[in-house]
Length: 413
Length: 224
Ligand SMILES: Nc1ncnc2c1ncn2[C@@H]1O[C@H](COP(=O)(O)OP(=O)(O)OP(=O)(O)O)[C@@H](O)[C@H]1O
Ligand SMILES: [Mg+2]
Image (tube, rainbow over all chains, first blue to last red; front, top):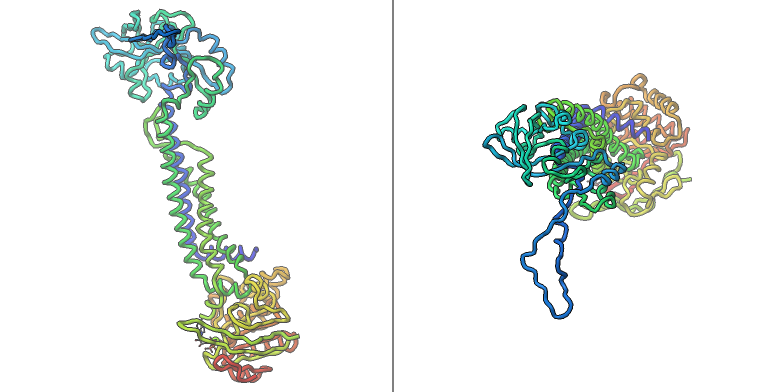
């Protein structure tokens, strides 16, 4: 056994150039695998972070469309009478969440939840002189809102937390402010759908990176929103929830089913395109990086095949001396496994270095100013495992060919 | 006990058509005998030797070596058998070029694993000395002359003290002085150690001095 390794070692070290080429192809393959997957996962996460600046992991709201319109006359009437209702009106008895208190209390007990933010979301008109623009107004609890959406990170002018001190303060999306032609410190007037009107002072501007949001969003305090819509103290329209792992939002949402009869909606519902875009990017990077690894595998196959052909006389003589087919497989397979291991370890290091360097390239996305890169242990483990498996396969076929060499044919000359 | 017993061997090659190389070859060799196989080029000497060596298993008839019938054994069994019982010297010296001379000699013993590495190495150095090659132990096999390589190959064939030593023109590349050395070693091994020697040779003097000559002609034994 030891002798086989010794022979493998001598074969390896006597062909340094070929060894280096084979090793580097594995190194390159594995480092690319790691880099691509780290980068794509970084991009996906940045994309997700942008998405979650305005979309909560789980949202609880009053889903009117899901409720049957109230029936004033039963469908079946006794006797021969026929009931016909024309132009039935949908009478909405309830709007928003009437009493959020008990729901919030129950939610606090859930372990997976990391943040709960009650909101009042309504459409309003903003007036600045003659300009009148409709906007999506959110009344929020500043601290809680920040826990769920990290809003403070995206307030580019002014301070999000100042909203607590200014009952009449408002924060506008940067695009919205541009359309209105206003800046921090200006006063604007808001009109609610129910006709209520109130003056606010702009204390900050918001830039999330999602243009649609930046052009329509306005944030005020929960209290101000209630005043504007003339609603009572515990009225909210939405309860926005953040969970520790957004991929598990569906599961968490399902576990909350008993808490309330209002609609509990995990983000994946109605945003499946986000999820599938992420998955597509993962699949693409995976396919490309595995392809690179397979190409590296062909390189090793080629080199090992050459080695076997070169050493065919030595293989014959070893077999003549009594080395078995298994010994020969070990001798040649060991060589490709060493190439795989060395190339793999170098590939891990190189992949890490490339990733770190890429993480310094300036690029504005979400709150980051450099290209997004994730460091997932699983990418490194997978890359290494794939690399080893592929070098093993690439080495196995030449080795098994070597083990089948007929010594007589070779020695006869 | 017979060191080697060959029973009605027929061997065919199939090139374009069936072609019989060995015809009803039949002979026994005693333990400790030093036998030369001679014959014209193409008479089938090498072919016969490859059958005896157990490397070529494609033949009719039966061969037994040291009382063991080798005909019909699996490739792996035969490899282990060769390793322990047969030593080879080929027409061309096939050494592993990247290994030192001592390492080349040690290879069959390292496979057999009957002795410790130190013992094997000691024996390998001893064999090199016996073949008049003292001081070349650490040279690479790629860096020696053909005659020297042939002697290293002989040393390698001897390392496991095999019962039968086979050579296909083992002295083919050697000058008369080295040929004499090899001949003496073979004779010594046969007569004092009881090892059986079978050597294919074109050297008539070498053959005449050996214990027994088997002559082949067109695949048949014509003289025993
Ligand atoms: N692999 C093969 N395929 C077909 N025919 C072969 C093969 N090997 C040898 N032969 C033929 O078998 C016959 C015997 O060959 P062999 O090598 O045994 O001769 P030899 O007596 O050793 O000759 P030499 O003294 O030249 O070494 C020759 O006619 C040769 O052409
Ligand atoms: Mg021959």
